[in-house]
Image (cartoon, rainbow, N blue to C red; front, side, top):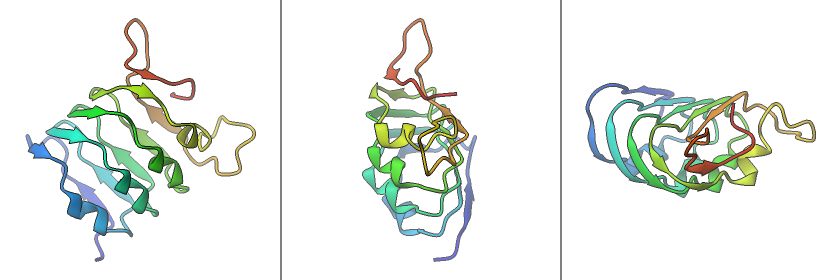
Length: 128
């Protein structure tokens, strides 16, 4: 398939994240923020190898953040906040942060998750 950008933010989309989106492996931008998407984040996010921009903030996703996001070498921006995600930010994602001096894959310039005080849900020391 040849659909490189998917921008469906602020459309009041309700329900689970469509698994078919992971078949579009040449996608470079996925923007589904400010909807009412539910469920857990699939490990299949790691299949979107060309992805540079991911915005899923302000939905109702829950559970942990999949380590497979760390396989996205081109990912420069990931907005994951304002959901019900919880747990540890996977090390593989933090290793891609551009502020990580030891990283050889340091494209990830912006990373947000619910990791700010006073009540952090995601434990992370690499968010912007």
